[in-house]
Image (cartoon, rainbow, N blue to C red):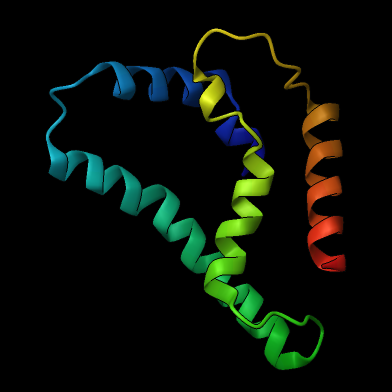
Length: 106
């Protein structure tokens, strides 16, 4: 997921959406529903299943899913402007490992 979100193609897409003030609201809502909302719902289901199985203490899977995604994204969504960021595969994997390990420990 993180590799997709920081890919040059996705960042360019976000730049275009941000620059287009006349994108109709239904289209923006559909983009959110098909991407972020579906991803969050799947993550919520996984967290709920892990909680119910006793493998994870997660009192609020909805908030926890959003927190995990926010931690993964860092400020990359803000960096859709031309800013130099190390988005190498090794850095993406290291960051994802750091976030998920910390999240599970919490």
